[in-house]
Length: 127
Image 1 (tube, rainbow, N blue to C red):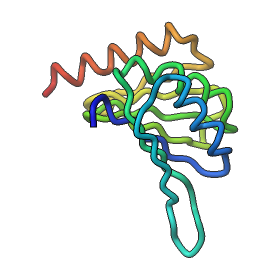
Image 2: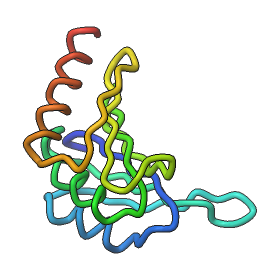
Image 3: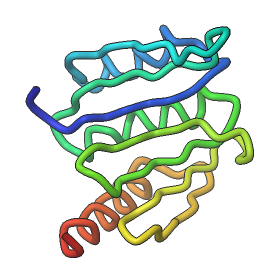
Image 4: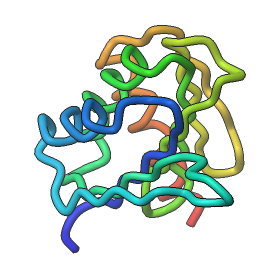
């Protein structure tokens, strides 16, 4: 697969709207996986984006669409995005290498892009 792996994990949200947000950014190879226990407990969607910055419009859209906050983990070679109902809607936490966390409240695309670029640059330096 070409591009950066982008993983979204959530429950109790509309899957089709999440996939639509990914499609608008040009994501490829979008695959939905149900997280199962005795019942379906959530959804994971895996897609590939051209760059880390391509995730910005998706994350901004989800932070407004989902009922809870969002954690964006950029420590690995993929970006893992998880819905977190301990956070209010519109709040994003960016987790970078070393576990450093930056909280953004209803960020603009420019704010989020700067935070992701800084976190990814830190991760590259620390490898």
